Image (cartoon, rainbow, N blue to C red; front, side):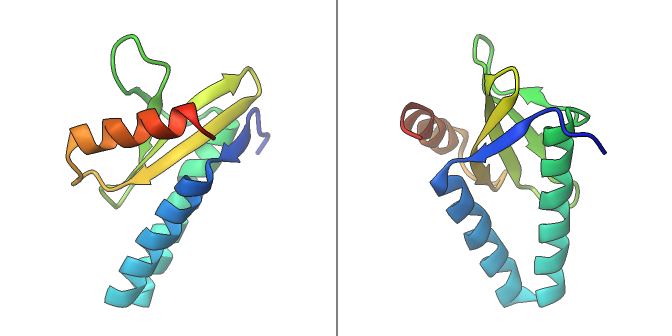
Length: 110
């Protein structure tokens, strides 16, 4: 598979991922493995440009893609034509206002 985009991870997005994986690992190591597989599939889709992504809000450049078997979403922004900045990995159960505040803070300070 050819990759169109280089993925750059915000440091806090990496922490989001590790925290979620640790949470699922406490429940069941197999569940953590499924989460990791879904996350890697989402990243491959973002890097290749083949993922179906959704605009976060009207007038924004932020986009998201949902993991297949989990409520988590990967939020990102296009830095330029060849790069995408992964800003957060967030459970869909979080309050939308909390997610928006988090994305605004991270978007300003990589």
